[in-house]
Length: 151
Length: 419
Ligand SMILES: Cc1ncc(COP(=O)(O)O)c(C=O)c1O
Image 1 (cartoon, rainbow over the protein chains, first blue to last red):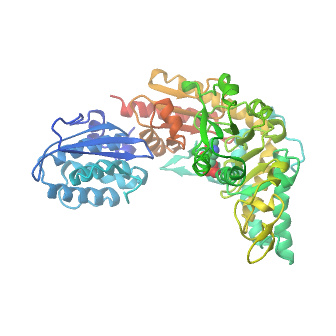
Image 2: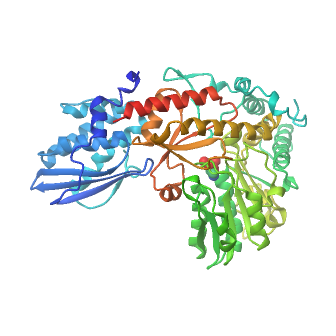
Image 3: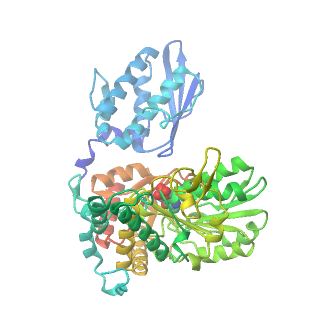
């Protein structure tokens, strides 16, 4: 009955949206950033605890649609323990993937977002948390909005 | 049928047969029959309107007012005939009270600039309501910034979404220059008693503007009965093309107003240093207007009156009530916004634990076109304590069978996202 939905709502996405991981405030966070999608009202806040160049811990809070919540949740898993440089690389891979459907290199579980490009209205939902993590890494404290980005 | 033929009695209308007039409705989306329930955003266009546009461009196209040749005369006649028809459509006293605009948004901006800059001063109050569309908020904010005026809002009563009219007289009290409010709320479906409200404002000498974007194609509009000073509407929400709308203004008010934009068409005489301008409505129509849009809107008004707008209003309410009742049966899994009874043909809702955008995406996969988001009502959403809602909005070509399918799809969505 739901075959037509599996391009977008893969089982992993449904699971992460219903039970988001690392979904709490982070005590000991060294930086944080707000992400806002004014079109949907999606609001999330990402917390980072850096140890030098390393993402020692990461979490998020907020509300949003299934895609944006699952994206943030999977992001926290993918980014924990990675270096700043590695996160930048994953960001670029995810960006390319949700915009075009092309999967470059090994993106692990994040490949579940490869179908998002077929749903242009939802690309911003999938990329919101990634813009927020890049902002938190820069640590300039500026909130990011999907409406100021090229998406 | 000519527009002067009286419309049929509502009992005799075969509503689903009218679907044949709308070519766009007969298609599949994602392999499913299209069920278009986003009519509050824009309506579909009947063949009569498409044909009027085609004929205009194939036969009569030329620029208006400036020409002496045959085609220009025809274009001018068609453009001014649309104005006369519009005056009749909303029962204005004269065609001189009809200004062609791009739509409701431009109509409100025109009033905020041309009327507002002359009549609103520091300390004055502009009274709006909490259910206004952004297009009936932001132009007033800009005016308030320019002039130092204040904005005040008549509150609504919770999820039921009725204006708190007990507070009206008190709020109309101190220094209010203008009351601008919507006839029908695009996210709550509330139908406001605008005639009564405008009468109460007028008694205190307050100028009134009615946003008729959601009502003009859905019920008879009589500006004299409403008693407003201004009324703005959009052609595209009432079977007409995009890019054309109407601003009604009371003649004696229009005459006191300076121009909105400068350019051709609106002037009497231009010197290098200063110009004199025409009488209303031309004073407010600078540049080449949307001539084909006016022609298309004329055809749309004729089309709607052949069905009868009082018939459309009744059918709208039937569809709205039917949908509201069917959605209520989804029980505690759903939160419904807007009045229980006497609502317009649209329903805003939230499914428990499912974001509006997920609802809309999945419904789209099933061919059902909904809208999700803040519906250009961000302050209202904040007041209701939500970020967004999903909305189904109907027009006369929608059927109860489509509503049944829409509600069935919502049931599937609840199952899909269920814990
Ligand atoms: C109540 C209301 N007012 C104003 C508007 C703005 O209309 P337009 O975008 O055609 O100018 C809309 C359209 O969504 C509306 O629903």
